[in-house]
Image 1 (spheres, rainbow, N blue to C red):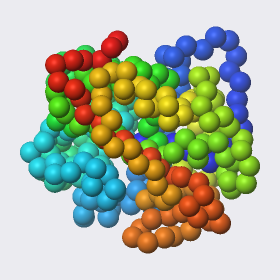
Image 2 (image 1 turned 90 degrees about the horizontal axis):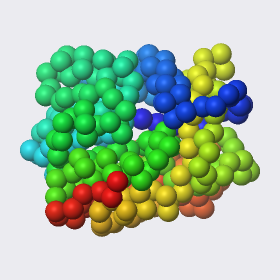
Image 3 (image 1 turned 90 degrees about the vertical axis):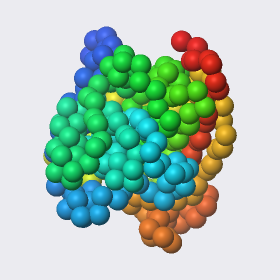
Length: 289
């Protein structure tokens, strides 16, 4: 799942008291609409994916390690390209997403490609209950995920609950500094970290047509919020990385680099684009919720 802050048209103010469930429903509707757009986009290039079944970036693969025979929970899997890629590599993988359209598509692709991935449609905060206490060797999530979550302490709790003792959590995510800037990275426009959501109307990252927009609700979480969400739930940080490139050309003002990477034009290594965390669940303890 990817976020789309750089397609912003305007920030909205919703009337009346909005609940977390309202925000959840707003975003689910947006992602149901976006899934249909993404399936026909050149960004995802579904025909190429069906031929190769290979979409997980090299950085992620290096952090995941050997997945052969491993049980993997893929949180916020969208319509399952990375989930299916991991399945083809020999993992026993379950993908979770809240979009009915995305999960329906993922299941259809799984059947079409003859793979053994499983998919579950639910809010990730409900995943421990919906998956009935299943535990995994690896929990994985990547690229535009935490911005859609209001509570990262609860997120860390879910991850801890879903991991086996000694199991590994891997996240590769867009750096929160990115979300401070306007579209051409010329000025700071948003807070680095704040509890209140940004409610916007915007086109998805694969489509810049201004008449094809959805209302979305996102949260800017600083690195401290991300890391503390894990540390407070018995997850020990093994490694943390920051990177000045992205494997995706989805922001404005990008230049192509080596090995299929992209950087912000004119900024070089001045602005980090990604961060990664690998964390391990300490034995015989669960999260603190």
